[in-house]
Image (cartoon, rainbow, N blue to C red; front, side, top):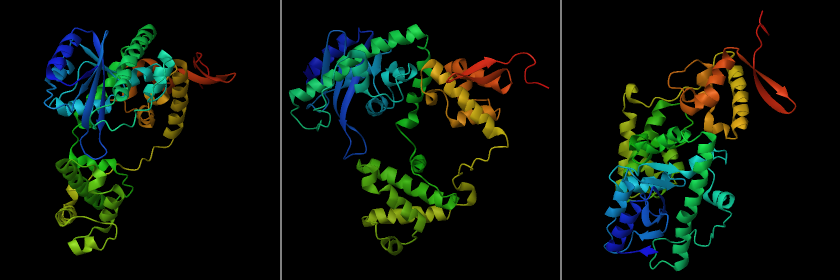
Length: 386
């Protein structure tokens, strides 16, 4: 069902407000804009699935946004990051709550890292996703019946996927694992990042703080310009060209024009030169602080290697990805006894891995091999000590 008028939208949202949960998906376009252009919102309930035409003339999405903010209704999405960014802007800096992301739920159950929607549909529902409308121009009107059917299938299959994943998590005692994993999705910096931090997306290999300051200034200018013009960042200034400008540090318009790959209008060119000159004049105390190259104390790399073996064994035991439990920084923190705030020493990660990691460091556990498997066993009293 395609909804294109306010009365029908209000009615369906009123009905879905009585559901325990609704499945949610969006279709949008972003190839020509900075902000995603919302074209369609799909909702799935027990008895109905609807597609809301966000581009219908005069459409008021107020009832939809009220449903997204309704604390009594769980919102179920898959790979929710981009969908949430759209709602963040529509809801004036708020996000749909409560929320569950089936991609994350699948990860904690061992279905793989960042498992795709199609893979889950195939594995859990035995259905096949029709891909013919995947790369549609969702902004073009009228929508084809095949496009609407494709969009609705996403929220219809998602109900069966969520119910099966939920039952499996409850059976395995992993439902509470979702809390920690979803927390990252509610970080406001994901959806409204400070332009002054935009430079961190770029691969700055130089350890020169002055160069980093110029990159920071140029990236901040580009971010603001992209937002103001609602254009993709790369349409304003490509990453590689930005880094080339920063490396040359042109302080005048003529010097900037001498760079062969730079093509900017006069206003943008002047803004770039101004940003460079401001960065070059910054006192040393205001330059970016670059992450130091890690030089671990002697013996620590070997401990990290042991912890990595333990991590792999624990991941195999629980049939989940090692990266979901810990990364290299986490292992180094444990090896260095930097336990305050260490991710693996809180929540479910401590239950499955953190306690074992600490016990291994204390010499209370040993790693061994039986057949073709790594095993973890308690150290026998007096064994290996002198």
